[in-house]
Length: 429
Image (cartoon, rainbow, N blue to C red; front, side, top):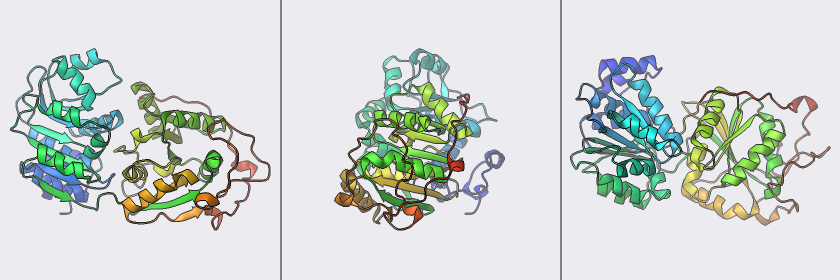
């Protein structure tokens, strides 16, 4: 199968795809779409960034086109996703697909007005994309009905399990009809996923286009061993090597992400942040500015590790290694999108050696060292992280494997490479 016309899609939908710049299906799309169009339940396993949204979105739009209008407060199809950012991204993709149809796409997420969401659902919707918690709020208020939802999609289902949404899924499932088609998509396959499949899917087709938990091959990975207190200066060095290119930096905590963003901002980088302490509006504005190029460095927690499709991201930095090994693959999957190449650098402090070994075991491959000295051989600096900017040394730059073997010192940055603080620009969400 080499193009969308061979998958059984309506020619008008293929024409819409062509207008959006899609000419050939990805492997997950080519494998999943015919089965979904045939009415089969489906479990789709694929690496992040492989086009899962269109794999369920295209057959869903085709199945809903030409059908009856939804009843007041009614929903014809439901898509559940774990984060607000992923909900917004899915909805944006489906809105593009339905632009020339009467189908209505609505979202419900936390952090936005509950009454406003209830009012928008009052007339019914064809496709509802939601986070589980906020959907339960609306169900309890009887602001929405799932009685006529004939299609259910669980996207990034493994992350929903990690985030403790299993009880929420059970509560939502009670409102859904038994006669429905269910699609489950995931990047990894923990044991709990088999149980979830057995509970919600009926004789599903299993589509797996790559081994779960393996990173995209086009990503150039490396680990730099460094003391925790030296991470900020090391990050400054790496960011200076690709001035003007978009970089995504992952921290473990909301507090740490915000402090690092402010530190980078004080050093003259056009930086922003997204994490759980940000309002929905703040998160959307930060992502819009990052996509639009006003922000070059986005510091985030794992709320940005799943599903976000930002093709311009060329560099991912794991400032803190994740506690959950699978999240490493999801994080670095934010680069090398749409066939592009990408680079991912992990900063590993002595206390994070256990996390590094767990990540390598989960991937089934080591991460090549590119700088520093592993484990206890890294000498302590006596400086504590997150204490704000410290004076820049005049004749010393952080170690970087990019300049030679592990532990070598790169040349100090020339004055021309030091950026002046950029003007602040705003972008509409």
